[in-house]
Image (cartoon, rainbow, N blue to C red; front, side, top):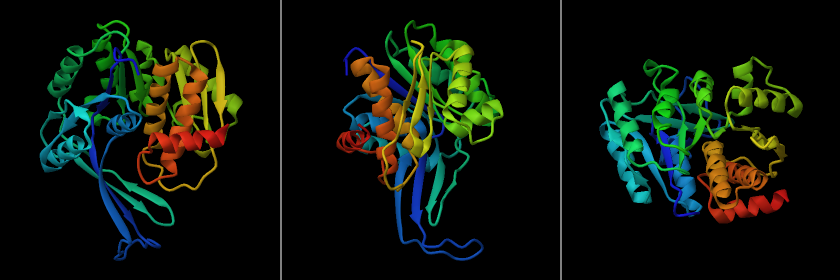
Amino acid sequence: MSKKIMIYTVTFNPSLDYYVKVNNLKTGAVNRTSSERLTVGGKGINISLALQKLGDKSVALGFVAGFTGREILSEIEALGIEHDLIEVAGRSRINVKIKSTAETDVNGAGADITAADVAKLTEKLKGRLKAGDFVAICGNAPSHLGNEIYSDIIYELKAVDGVNFVVDACGKLLTETLRHKPFLIKPNLFELCDIFGLPYKVDTKIIAEHARKLQKLGARNVIVSLGSSGALMVTETQQALFVRAARGQLVNSVGAGDSMIAGFIHEYIKTGNYFKSLNFATASGSACAFTESIPTKEQIDYVESLML
């Protein structure tokens, strides 16, 4: 990766993710775990971790609070990820990820973030950004901040010319940013269908058609992640690309979309080629789904070899 380009990730709601395996989970009854682990999480944090495993440097920004926030800071520092996280009121969330006959997630609410806290975050980024840098704003934000909060951040940061914004969020949090022409957005199939009121079973022609509608609203490039089916991308160079995912056993879907974004940024900075970047991104997402955590470069390369 060029030393001149820096990647920043923004996570409003970093978390401690508590993964438990329960054989045949029964609701309304006492269940015992067969295994458990605790990791730091949040979409932007996951992207920073994935980039680190690819040999790329990033800076993780966002908000932490309370004793859980202190543990998140401790874990991030132990992992060697550079950060500039802001301590705020409340308590950072704990997410419970239950693996049984199906995957079940119970996600916490998160810290008490104010408009003044967001302004502080924006100023931190303004002081760091330069042309060519990437800023990935990912995940949910507290509802009291409004659906335009990510759009407002990008508007403020556009004062720095040539910054590449990547947005991975749901609904209006995502669509409100399109007026500022982000470099890349990555809705999954269900998020795309929710935006346009489509049935969840649609073919690639309809997916591409609606991805182009997001382009017309302002997105420069759009990747629609399709889970085990792969990914579809429409580019600002008028390409429509589709990559099939490798076959494999699903182990854990958490972080797969974040690994996809990290993989795309990594490969795009290296090659500037959309197809190579989409292919590597798809391999990254699949490799994550096939393992219990964020994949290594070697694991991604192996999965990509199965796709060729």
